[in-house]
Amino acid sequence: MGAVRLPPHPMAWTRADIPSLQGRTALVTGANSGLGLETARALAAQGATVLLACRSLANAEQTATHLAAEGLSGLEPLELNLADLESVRSAASAVATAHTSLDLLINNAGVMAPPLERSAQGFELQLAVNHLGHFALTQALLPLLERRPGARVVHVSSGAAYFGRIAFDDLGAERRYDPWGAYGQSKLANVMTALELQRRLSAAGSTVGQGRSSKQSCRRSSRPSAASAGLVEVGGRAPTRRDRPLSRARVAGGKRSRASSARRT
Image (cartoon, rainbow, N blue to C red; front, side):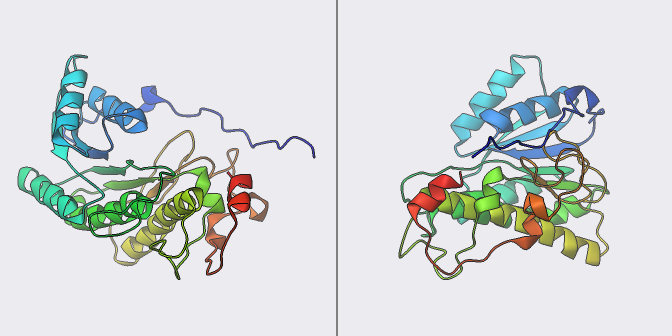
């Protein structure tokens, strides 16, 4: 078998292209590390007020202190445990108390392929954190987003969505648990949520999610973004059937072998 050639993803947009964000408010989940930390840093550098939503308040405060030492300001620690829907409700309530509106919600936090664990409400952990917690957070914050014309919701997904299957007959992994299969399911759910949210908001005449979102892996998308490798555009063009578009999302009721999951990662 020959080598698989991946389509090019030229860096057409960088941090230097971010306009002034003075007077704007953003919330980033998982802001204490990785992509979440870098996103928070970039937004704060352009003058945004950034809510640093982390699993523990200690992590959020430590992140705020770290970024403040770099000369950044407008940093607000926020405790948000996406594995507990009560924590999600409390965080959303705290945001609504402190702010009258929200410009940008970046659903970034996630867990990847851990041993079987369950959330506070008993859901499989990856589905709970990566999808259900963010879904609940988005719904709770939509009234604040609606107050800002052009507000955006970004769902950070993964190329794992391509092999994801929604196992409606076993969402809670009661019969079988495949860590990578569950991860793919949660990432596909992110993309499906972004698309359906856009459809419903557009039908309602909402301005949330309209406009353009630029990202190396999600270039120029006019919808609540599913930021991921090639999920929205492939090599600067719209995806085709050969690119296995996510509009053909697969729903699975049957079982998949671990070997199959491993081959598709």
